[in-house]
Image (cartoon, rainbow, N blue to C red; front, side, top):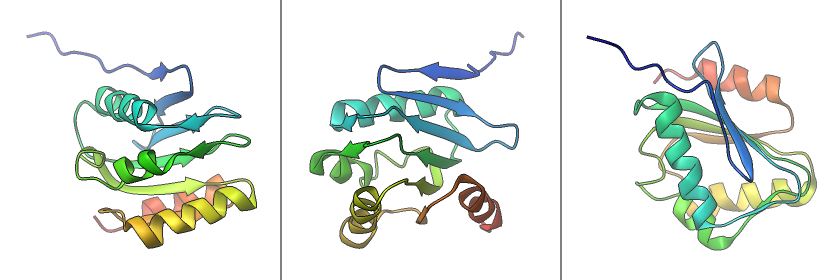
Length: 132
């Protein structure tokens, strides 16, 4: 029986999705992008393809001036959106992104462990430290 190989990376119009050697799936958002439900669902599908349908740790890396609509944040906090997610770390690079991300965590109450970071290294350390 032939085994299917998983894609190494998926390039979307707004983001790039790929898996690191350690199994963490990275969602790199493009610059000056506003993510809505359509884009969030594309990211979910790409995560499913990259992970082979398994639950994985997710590292979200915001681009310059990346933002998400209220509807996209609602979707991100839904059971459907975390179907392939063990935990999520968000790396933000400016104050507006940090405010939106904090609001997302405190208001939407994500269904998986979720934390915000200013740098990728700290986010990866946190993801790897989780006992899931």
